[in-house]
Image (cartoon, rainbow, N blue to C red; front, side, top):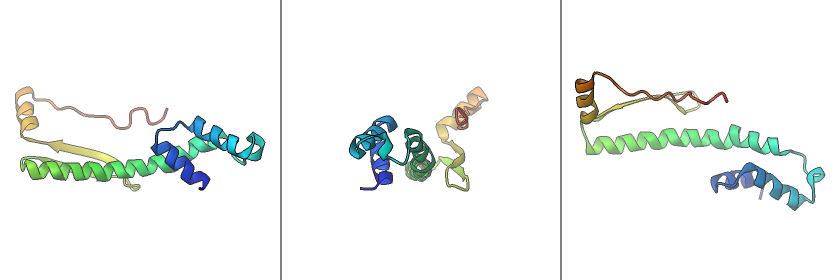
Amino acid sequence: MSVRRTIENNEEAGIRPRKTYQSFVAAAGGHRELNFIEKDVRNYIMREVRNVSEQDDAKEFRKYLLRMKEKNQNLFFELELEDDQSIKVAFWADARSRAAFEYFGDVISFDTTYNTNR
């Protein structure tokens, strides 16, 4: 099995990058036998594996909203995606949220950029 596939499988299974790297070290017979470090494993996960997850999240969220619209014709939603197919803007409103807006005169907003540069 390739290193990349192993990293992807371990990430999907919830195995921490440190444990994944340590398994490579053990299999290779030491740190010096590898041509990458633990940080490379983490970078690969952030760049490749989680990016795919964000794209899948957008697709699944859209499917969820479409299913909800089938159940409730009063649901309105709109999604705007980034170039990489991750969610840029998401808006949805159903009859209950519209009634709450009429009563309270306010809405709830989620800042999806929070914590992205940490």
